Length: 314
Ligand code: ADP
Ligand code: MG
Image (cartoon, rainbow, N blue to C red):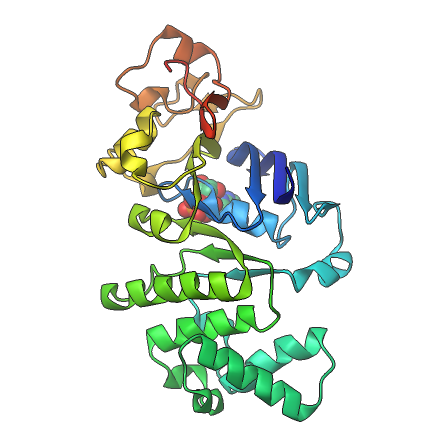
């Protein structure tokens, strides 16, 4: 099988004395045309994975391949030729555009970095791309402060699309928008996926977005993929991992913002109560936890074709 993107044993540690394992051994594969939804509560490492895959940051350990080429060891300069094929869309699009530029000029700058065209061709391409995201091309003469939240996110998508990328990472693309606009933007992501043959990594904490846009889903908890499904229909009925079940019952118990995982020198996790925690990252929140869960880290194992779970109890 050919993969568009593959990560192997990806780790990202932050801090020196107290280490946070933002990514803890993440191995993932994304097939071309099969968009992946990455879900998990706040702090689980989703954005870190997005930044590392898109080469905005280096992993502490592990490999990343994109279009059959290893990319984790490339310098920014070496990665440049691949940047055209891999774009990232962030939650808050306001910051993406410089308010002293018009929207059109900001988008043109991205295009100019990669393609040598005539002025007329630049303008045509910008107009066409703005239209394809549902914006009036005349909006290119405005600056970011003259756009609504929804228009701004559309312009942001146009900016990512202008290079005709193969792979687009969307990090919470609708979270900063009003509920009434979210569906429209998700619709737009779906439309352009078909039209331009884009594959997404859709990062979201909103589970309802996933089946809408993606064909596969990975559930992340404390830097690890705890469950992966090759199918996004009725995910809530199919998930098996105790954490996924909690997510889908939408009753996250702990306040994720209060969570601080700290590790001691021997790389053992120390909980908020300063007890050393080994084994499964979820055992202290798991109702079914047994002795083995406290001792050994469960592997992400395939239990049915296309369905992987990291849990000792399945
Ligand atoms: P998510 O996107 O799922 O909310 P993040 O990837 O933003 O999660 O964060 C995962 C963990 O890594 C969190 O505990 C966060 O505090 C930590 N983290 C993320 N970025 C940094 C950084 N630059 N420096 C230190 N810690 C970080
Ligand atoms: Mg995030």
